[in-house]
Image (cartoon, rainbow, N blue to C red; front, side):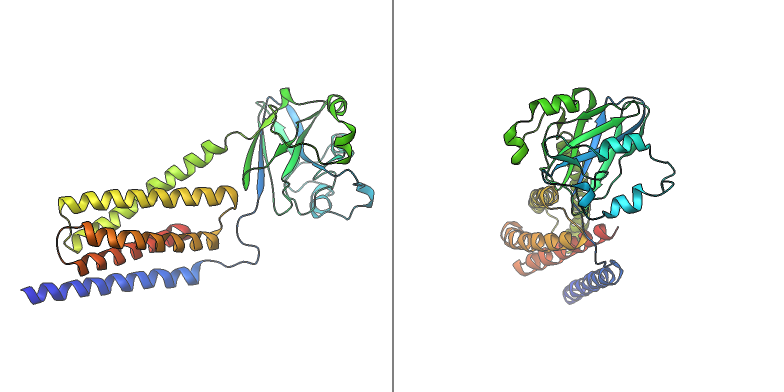
Length: 333
């Protein structure tokens, strides 16, 4: 009986190892590789208190020496705005578009319609029914310092104060009622501001709000999912390895919850400041798993209170390998 029990453990380990290898092989073949893969910086503007009807919204970038007529053609302008009929099914109002295109106050120019910011994609058109609209601007030309400009059907133009992008994928709240008219903006522009980059501050009219709530919700859900599945998989393995004493369960729960919290926090911070594509996520996952291995192996070997140290270490290795495979599977999904 003893020899059979001892023989059963290696068989289980072999099956688990085969399963992990299969997962990683599938990951290598089925994760698509593209030249332009990975996250891109972006700015999502969530505008409120807008007038009803068609509204054009764009970003302004500081280009004091910019001459639109002499600038090189921009992909967005040539292939998006100049269509006879817009690909999304609407045509542009030329007067509203001109208000964006010709805007030039204190060296600030329209990023998309004014062709002042290359390698930036997005849209300017939105139809407002309940005072709210949302547009995303993204790609490598996403500016770090900008203003928001809005043009309404009545020809009214409103502009925010200067905003700085702090997150890799920023979410900006814009209140139309608190924004400035071009005349008000021109009155506060100084000679120094017209010849040098303006001071960067976050005004009441366009504050970076909603980002903490968005990331907290997103990564809280990630923690619940990854931690829950990790506890399930590693808990089953704990029983298979016959390490399921009361003391071991306490050590197991405390250690895994702590390491999953740290991994989730690292993912959130890296995503906020740098962005995470599948390749970057795998690198972060591997680094995190190496650290977790280094923590959990001595913890389990020292604090678990039954079976041999060899079995405890083997459990820690197999359990963490299974968790790493789980992370890859979740990424593919």
